[in-house]
Image (cartoon, rainbow, N blue to C red; front, side):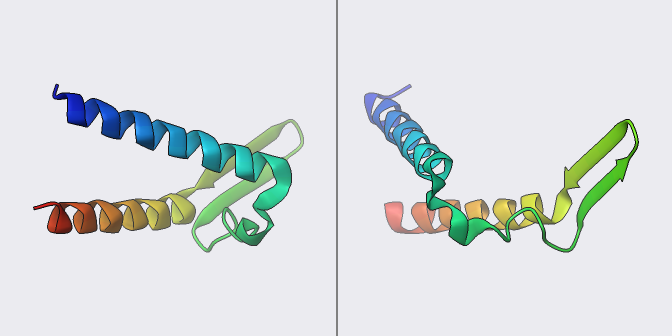
Length: 76
């Protein structure tokens, strides 16, 4: 592993921590729609609760794939 890759991973980790702290402290009200998209399965019955965010995870995967594609495209 190169030292540059290690620095990138640390910066990504710090970014995730900062984003998590921001959302945890109430700054994520603009993300209230996330988790309620079409395709998110929610089943609630007495003694049983299931939540499968298929639509939200598909959107998140597409967004992260786009970001990684842009990083690779402009990296070199």
